[in-house]
Amino acid sequence: IQMPWPIVFSTFASGLAVGILASALAIRLKREIVPEVQQSDDHRLTKFTRTKDIVWKLVVLAIVYVAFYFLFGYYIAWQSPTLRQFYSGTQAILPFWAHMQQQISTDSWLVLFQVFRGLLWALIGYGVATNTPYATRWERIVLIGLVLSVGLAFPILVPNEYMPVEIRIVHFVELLMENFLFGI
Image (cartoon, rainbow, N blue to C red):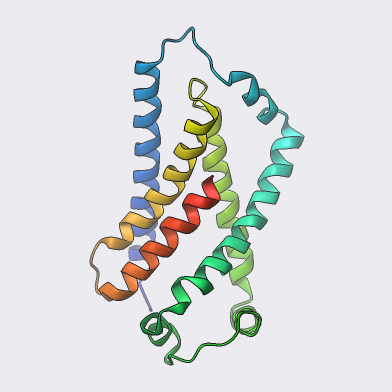
């Protein structure tokens, strides 16, 4: 795409800001609705507090994120002939494993970068989980899914000179589904 780094950074920063703002507002709203004496599911948060368990879970989640990234990328986004033409210059599609082999051989840093992203998303999810002690388990699960998906997907809807509307819509659907399910 040859998007300048300032545009990449501002897109990332705007998504992060939306995610943080949405989670902060949700936490504040929940605290106003539920009195402080009620602490539903609070005992479950203690499972998250042991450092060894936290590190293990974050590493596993980072690896799961990489799987989500490639599976959703291929089976949702890459199924669009317009998107394939935009990124590869051809509408031809390879089978999944051949596509993966080509991706990794073409851009070997991509997997490592996605592990890093997965770690960041897992840390954000952990922050939401541990800062919503008054939420029920299901409220916490859905909130994490929304925080991780909305902040990433919605900035893509903003028109820009680097991505045509068709590409942005396909990526929006892909990212919204991928990160919501990952958050859950």
